[in-house]
Length: 216
Image (tube, rainbow, N blue to C red; front, side):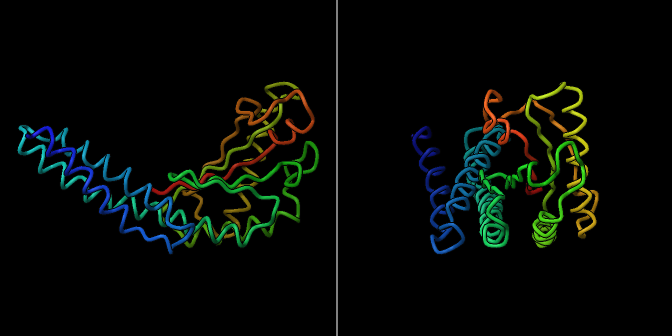
């Protein structure tokens, strides 16, 4: 009987939080519902791990589902809201992906920088300023600014260029009011392509700066 009660309690707790995230919120509340379900599940696992016997594990699992579900739903809803706002405010050249755990804002380096330059173009300054305002409206997050290049040229040159370009974007965000301690600038060089480097189109996709916004 114990083996059946615990899964049913877990499922009930998870569905309570999933149902509480209405479809009328940002993006239909999809990420909020997913976050609630994941949070409840993780809370259950943590609760089970902390119990010394079957009864204590069941009680801890129920408590963990409640706490984890609330946290997961809150994080998912905040990401949904910020994603919706940014899609309405940023230019069409900027990509936005919400994976449920973070927002990944991608800007092509070809429109951010001139060839071999680390000076952010004036055309993208306004988008970065808009992004900085959004980051400040959601203060309980950290921001990784990650530079990527294609495979043209030496690996060491590409790594250095990606690092300096990430730092340049991070500096614009800081100068636009984001606290420096919230931003980490990282260069990845040519190591993380999203497309083939064998074609001009693929290399263009690989030349990018990703701003990854992650709830704390």
